[in-house]
Amino acid sequence: MRTGNRRKTPVGWIIVTVGIIVLLSQILPAGFWWFLLGACLIGVGICINRNCC
Image 1 (cartoon, rainbow, N blue to C red):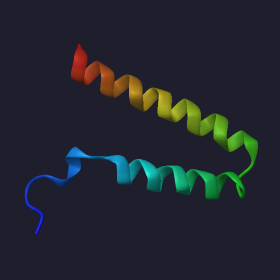
Image 2 (image 1 turned 60 degrees about the vertical axis):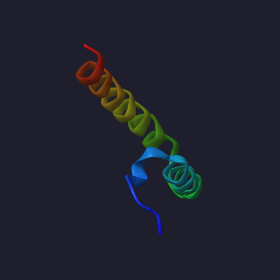
Image 3 (image 1 turned 30 degrees about the vertical axis):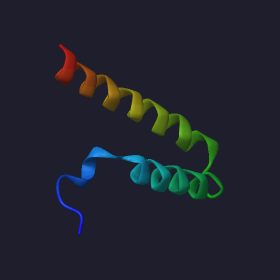
């Protein structure tokens, strides 16, 4: 049985996230993706500021 923290290897989560994005990209309009890109950039900026600065 596996012990320890399972969040050390996020490869599985990355693959699941990419799969969800591919499925949603076929359904949602292009304007939504610009909104999502902006939201992701804001989130990444906040994380960088909290962890690095």
